[in-house]
Image (tube, one colour):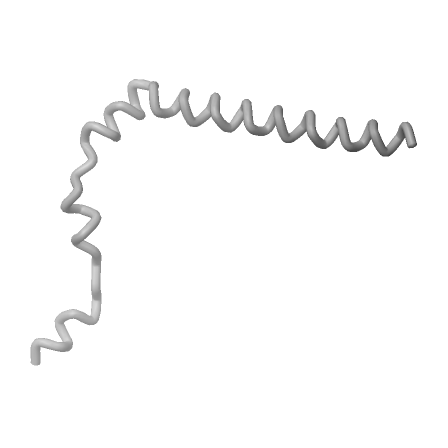
Length: 60
């Protein structure tokens, strides 16, 4: 019984550690100089303009 509780607590501890590292990395990237520069230079038009190689074939 004691080993099952130990394994469950180990898994819960690893999950909590995973979430802490995930949030720390995400916040670190967003608050870094490079992250701010990328966010500042994002252009919403670029998301709409996608490369479509077969677009020219329809114009014939």
